[in-house]
Every structure is written in structure tokens, then in C-alpha cells.
Amino acid sequence: MEDIERFAGLRIGTGTLYGAITRLEQCGWIRPVKSADDRRQPYTLTAEGRRYLEEQLSGLNQIVRTGLKRLKHA
Image (cartoon, rainbow, N blue to C red):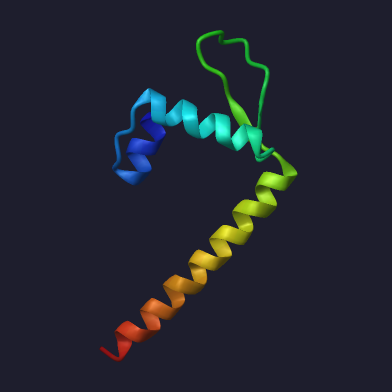
């Protein structure tokens, strides 16, 4: 939650975070990693999660490039 707040400037609740983690895990995009710290459960991207994220970022990148190009002519 702290990381999300730092990079996105958005404070989310635990219910929102755990709901998102559950959905990502159900889709097979993340998986838990064993940790010595019982308090926190780290996760890692799966290969399928990486492919999906790359596809999404590529689409967003196209939107950004198009927007920046159009701003030059505004």
C-alpha cells in the first residue's frame, strides 16, 4: 500500500488491495513467494502475468504517443 501511494499518489484501503491481489492470483498473473516474514506475503509476476502486463503497457504507450503527437499541433 505504501508503494502504491508513493508512485501513484493514491491511498488505497486494505480491502481494495487484497481484492486486487486475489483477482490477479486467480487470473494466474501473480503467485505468492515464500517469505520468512509472517506478517507480509510477497508476490511475483508469473510468465503469463508478464505477457499480459507487457500487452497492456504497449497499448497505453500507443495512447501516450498519439496524445503527445496531437498536443504538438494543438
